Amino acid sequence: MRNWRLERIAGPVLCLAIVAVAAADTGDKGVAAIVNGKAISMADVDAKAMADNMKLAQQVYDARKSALDDLIIEQLLAPEAAKQGKTVKALKAEKLAALQTPVTDQDVQDFFNKNKSRMRGRTLDQVKGQIKNYLAGQRGPEARNKLLAELKKDATIKIVFDVPRADIAVSANEPARGPANAPVTIVEYSDFQCPFCSRAVSTVEQVEKAYGDKVRVVFRCFPLAMHNRAKFAANAAECANDQGKFWPYHDKLFANQRNLKDEDLKKYAADLGLDTKQFDACYDAKTHESEIEATIAGGSRLGVTGTPAFFINGRFLSGAQPFDSFKNIIDDELSR
Image (cartoon, rainbow, N blue to C red; front, side, top):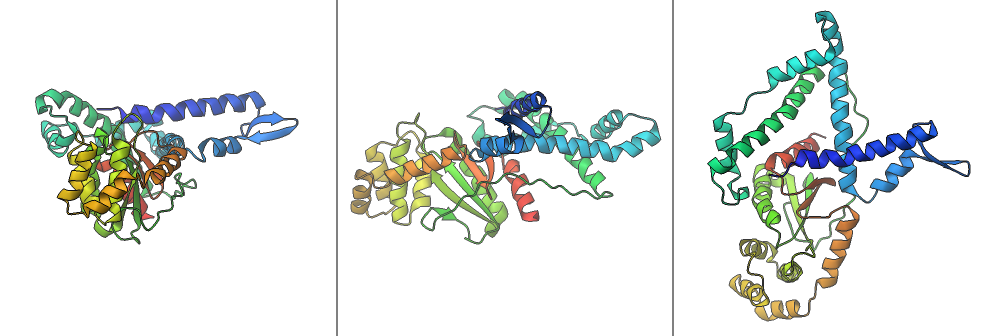
């Protein structure tokens, strides 16, 4: 399993380190450089660096939010720590330990059962250790969130910085499921030849089942250069969309990722009852190629470098992540 936490923290730590060095050189924490007597602020630098890179913006936000949560906890614990004659650090560790439950064999079994499609055919015995380590790693942040929620009950806190969001317009002809007025819109950039995208299919379906009319899912074809048949599959899917059969065709492609030759793609259209003459003409003419190229360019400008990539009400979520990653963002959006 990929270490998402490490991957998401490394970027912002480097970014913030560069910020600190730039500020130190000028003697003013708000200034990055002075050119011919005119200052360039750190706010200007951040805006330039992150305006069109939501992946970087999200990484920086995650790092800042994590640090802010820790500072809030420590500030709220300070009076109790003083009364008990303890350091804030010691009291915090004590409370977190009390809230962090150990990972049981049943927890491991449950996780394995829910994520069999992500195990690449490996047995429970083969992945038991990895799952246990992964779940244990999740318990720390969960305990911190519980502690923060408890402390907030008796405190007045106003968070004044918001999550970074991409401004993504959705056109009427894009393949979508769910009501247009749903409070949460998920825009997915995906590749029909990508194995991680295939794994994400069941997670997205789980999200749709859990939230019903509260979510709308929009699919965008983002074929990666490394996949030699992905662009052909994307064009075929768009041709199916012209006939109102995008989602059945979408399912067919992900169920047959190893069979995406021209004849396969045309056969799937026939299997699904599409007008094959119209489909074949659309496919052979590469009717949607420029449209797909435009989608790739637009996604790249937003920081999409791999698939799948999701924007949940404009909030960036990278990779085939588990249901809980979607749930955390969706619940937060619904609470706003």
